[in-house]
Length: 597
View 1 (tube, rainbow, N blue to C red):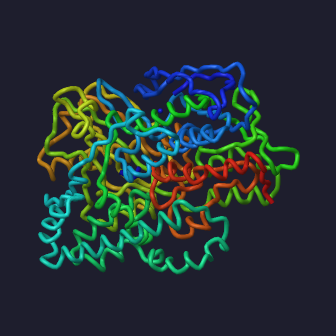
View 2: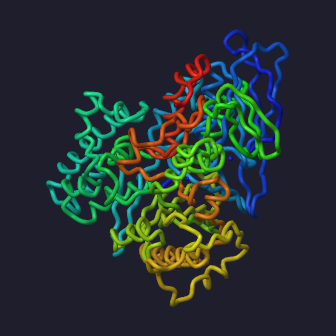
View 3: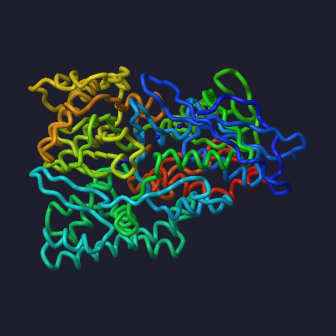
């Protein structure tokens, strides 16, 4: 809910044809490989490379990281005429947008729903293809969510106005529907203005925010009021204020802190619906990889980068050095690894005190939340759960304070339950269900308060350990407690199973045949996420717009960052939009390299 996650062998830089002058080579075939990692399987795709003997010299680009932003940018750069190599530390592409497998069940490791399908269609159209041609089938999820309250009551969120009229009036009375339409109208304005004035633009400094047109619309975006405050102007009941604000967790933020602008997320869901790619979210990544390969992109998997190389002046990138010691040179370097990680690990810290101070300052910026994620293989179907389910804490505000102020897990968390097999039967064996549970928790803190043991990714062969995982007298944590992840995971598991049983009447405990988990320590170790924060830096006002780290690295040009902290449309949507926005600028860099001051 807050967000959801793929592999190639190393290969030398290929010599590729000029696609503008010659016919495309035959369509590459993908062979799928199950790479065993920490007792479970991660889905990846091996590539068959083809060499063209008479290739025209091209500008070259290196992309660090084969997440969604990396593979999308690779395809766009190759489409623009670059010779592109993608370097990925893991044996699979997609990053957090990859798949896990266990006992015939398929799990989306990260993103589990797709918003703004037209943006994805536009991206593929710009690459000369379409989702359909690439084998991506989108199915609409109806309802969007079932929201479960503490007393067993439910709210059905839908993009069907007739459904929403009945649901809203049930709680807010006859005037409630008109107020709902008012909320939807405001959220629509937030959406339209954000796409036009923010998503498809770069802000390089305060001056770039002083455009008269932007300033005129800034107040309409309500950036200085929380989404909770804005929702409270339209909804009179506490319950519906919660229903229309929990989406701030997409941004890894509390609804009491998230700018009112972010109601645009509710608009995208309520107006356009929620979609799911048949076969898992990685189908989108797989399609982008396929497009890139046909355009000559080379993917080198299990190839971690040690550092980004700068010239003697320290102001221009020359390439990268791999952990193996191999040096690769390129005209352009694009970073798709975590922003804070890159500044503190991939870029030299000795160039100047000013540059080192910036890297340190990034570490001190507030981060988004992390998550404990459970992946459960059930031995039968559970019709009591829809594809997307939200369980809201009774102590709503206190639960967010525990996450974002204490960096812990609440005594009673709000959490998200995804059952992909409800809309895509291929996600589970016949007669069974696949369940993913995402519990927002605080990100990792300093060593004095955290235990960083690798506590997860085990595979349970039976459910016996689940019953005894948390002592009956297990309590929550106080602000002075340490981040003891084994205890916090056990607490989360027990609380979730109890909550689901109480509110739906079904006890999942005896139905779980296999369990896989992720927690902040594994998000950090597997994907180099600073503090294990699954959405990077916080998306508060002073971390977006001109305050957001630029796509252009402050240290060296041409070095571009795709992961400077995601904007108001979240993870996958945002990086696809970023790649779309960056195409022209990448072409400019290839012709006239820019240098940092």
